[in-house]
Length: 355
Image (cartoon, rainbow, N blue to C red; front, side):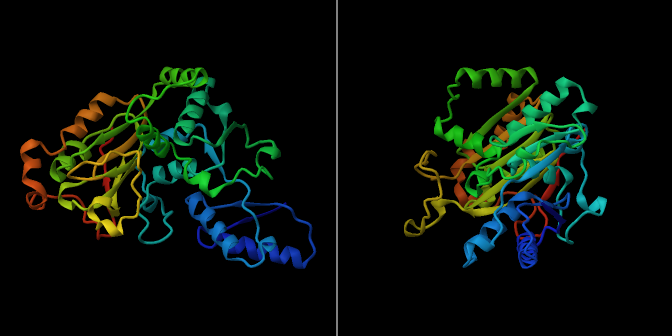
């Protein structure tokens, strides 16, 4: 096998060129292990490989992406998620517009992986290693998870596994699985088989939980800032989904937090905001359609350890428009105070208080 290190830009093209050099030298190299920089995330590389494959006239000449592996430090993963460290403060940004946190990177590296290696398990207790494994499974529902000491992992788990599938990878994140399950069951608790029930019980024993917040009313932007984004969210590791802001009525907002940094940015027009002939069918047929507001809603998945679900739900409920505000309609909503960053500015990050 060969190995190389590459930047986050052009990994697929770099590997393609490397395989061509090996082929020209008549080398019988079967596998390449590519170590990407610590601040890169897997999904863009996976998409790039897929694009290279689809655009090539000679599929046999294009290297096949076999397995995406993320190594997790058993001792430092959770402390780094809870810390409020920005890549810029550590001199690790890819460019001047890179406003990500360390937690952003670590969470996405876990969410988009085929294999998760928990390394240095000898530096934590057995209970801590098991809790971390359960947390990783909550963040990524399909990856193979293995524990390791000094990075020693059987080669068969990493090489020529044929685990990679872009379609499956895009469905791997736990937050997305939570949303899908919520709509599939109509918002009701899922029926669990014995093995699933045992897994849920073990999660509860380690204080790991998740839930979906859903509402068919918009958030008041000022209250969202004052009563949610300015508050400390105990135990939250990840929240992600889509939200409806009263002052930006027609635009679906993409909501995400990793650790203590919240980011809200425009995702797309709500289906209900499009002319009927231009609707894409992007809204799930399982999602309720409101007679007046269509698919506009709050749908946010929450994952954490020692989370207070009742408190978080009450916090978010307090940010929704009340009956009198709803009666005003979009014209009145547009006049509301909106302290949130513009969706046309470069950075939309807001730091959530942490203890």
